[in-house]
Length: 261
Image 1 (cartoon, helix red, strand yellow):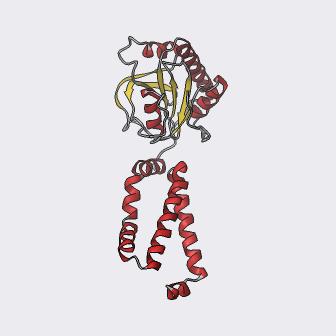
Image 2 (image 1 turned 135 degrees about the vertical axis):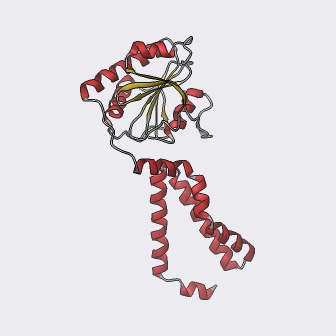
Image 3 (image 1 turned 90 degrees about the horizontal axis):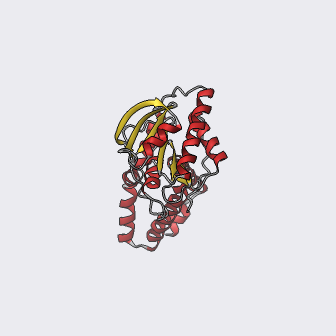
């Protein structure tokens, strides 16, 4: 052990620091909210590895060394969804967004529909597609390709409508699909009071950059879901601002936090 400590130089320390910075920034790029936990795990791992090396625990050293040699494969399995999202983002093309007057009209119709459904306690799930495609993530769905109107949205989500349980997809200012099934989130931290619509919205937002609006059938509250976060019971002014940004193709804020009814 003394010989190993004698051979440890400032250059080695700098080398370890550079590797740590690279890993941290890569984790932030994949998913910001897990970066800290990943860094803590790596710190504990390296402390355990060097402790076992210094104290002569050969079996522990062998086990940790083999885990480290397979770390790339392990990380690829753990973050497969996030890595897929990164590659989709790298290969995306700029979408042709609707002009501002059309955006304002679409936002007004969405706000009107959401307010009316919230007042009547009609559940709704509305997806605003942004830059990343979602076709490979949604199931079933009825092709519509119509102008976004509050009347159409209300008729789709009426309880006796055959497609009221699915999601509506809005792409480039047009209502393109209805009755779509979205991937459910397996996040264990989501509040148990949230139902299937919120879990579906969260599941999609964990994979792509879409903005999802949810109207709760139980409470009549409006939620916005983006980047794996739920903002519950959002004020109308904030809903309008976020919808406009999404339809304009602008970057959305990432300050949305998990909420509880």
